[in-house]
Length: 125
Image 1: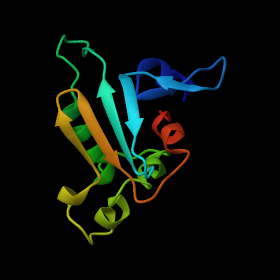
Image 2: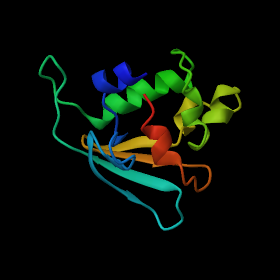
Image 3: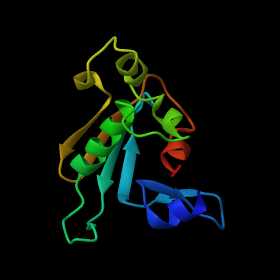
């Protein structure tokens, strides 16, 4: 797991010295007053082939998790996200998932309810 953390970077990461969460690929983020909507602003970053990293890259990857196309011991990290469980149960279609892009560098995640440990979940590999 530590190897994965050193190879792949998420929106936020845990500082191994302090244990505090800090921005990683997100330059910054904000949380709505009701505690249910996170907005992440991506820093300028590039894939190894030189292509720019965009918010759509996160969406495409996360949709694979929601569709259960990829297996991980951390799939539960998506449970707080709006409609994920209902989509996985076949009750709702994928278009109702609680994350979307506002533009190439802005990503919005809507939660079912305020989840104080959500950033910790995002820091998982």
